Image 1: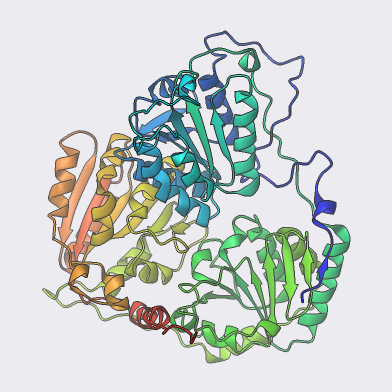
Image 2: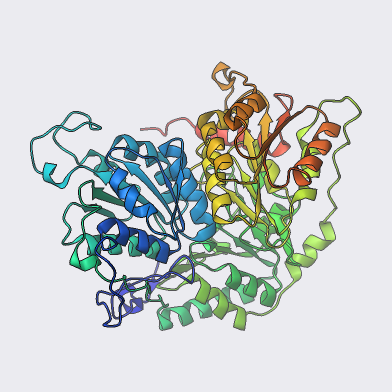
Length: 607
């Protein structure tokens, strides 16, 4: 049994607030209002305006919404806040995905929908945000407060007088739920919900009765006190013990390595991870979902560790090591390529956001990842053996053959041109599918953003996420890579991108179906109806706003399209449909698909 050192209670601040905000500008709410607070007019002292001001203080300057009769008055008061912009979306699912993409850049996002029909539509996106540890504030316009506790049947419900169906659905995919149907405790409920989202880095649900948003109340009569989430600290004795045990473990190793995982984000430990890499001399890899969290220009960076589909020579170094530090990993069937990683628990130091496990030995609780990695960096013995081994076996990658004149465009040739496009002024969004694998092979320059949804893997996520991410960082140009099957799920919000003047470049990979599913298990259901995708986007554009489309079949057409998108159309939304063969997939997808299929197809254990 694991031995745990350090009590969780010992790391709590005295005021009971635990956690740190997603970004340094956010903080938690104090109960008291200082005497110097500025009084505001009764028209601004409403529940809706209070919520708007809280969102702005938390770091949200854009909300993604779909109007419905239960949230209309609330929307009036939210958009009355000068620093809060409403981004109207075509459907609730995309509004949730947009809030997800926004939170990836800003540290927090928000969406606003109506009761049940809107809430259950956005639920899938909120579940994805929960799986990816993103603080998304989901705000729902709820029924009139007088209807709670009655036997009335309302529209937008399943025809029962019980209004709790939506709430029950959200309880499993949010870390806090606030049902605001009384003004007296609205201030407290809203503040607690937002603070919990920031502290836990998970979505929350706030339902506000439709008749309350416009009503002034004394608790809203002064500007809210700014957030100030109390910082969370490690248990000092536990931290020292964890560092001592880890040093003893690592210093006995001949060729240790480091691997970063996706929870580096929620632990805010990327800088500490690099600090340890600099001090230790160990080679550095990332798990696929952590791409973009560790600078790829680090001198000891190996690439992506993804078992059999890793960057060349990366898995050989990681799996042959006699000790490895995994910081913030998630080992699921996808990230482990069908549970086929050749790792041994007794060789691993696994660093979670709030605890450390050393081999088969003890687990040290209440040890924060960033503090642990920094403390380890100050004392670790430098050892470059594993990196020297990598340097000896490394052979530079070959380049794919250039397409001949008139030869249909190949995906591997396409991504040679994409590599030249990315810079510190761009960000990459990769949709679930073969874009996962092709984009993993891109070498990210410093400052280039990178996002994809590996844990939840919901096809269609990238359209809404691209909308939200681009809205959060308008100074970057987003490059989105979306398969035709995924695009058909959520295509409508191209409209919202155009409406809001976004300058994203979308590469629509048209290969005639759900290619990632084909490589796991093929069948006629993986073939989709082909659309005239550029024609669809032109119809959505309808002459309003800046939008440019192109359809390419050959490499020379792709080169010309990229040139146009990055020069004369650099301030427009650019949609480039890339037509490729249905069997044109990366070798990594072929390998990964067969291994995931084997994992899915395991026979039942004997009973």
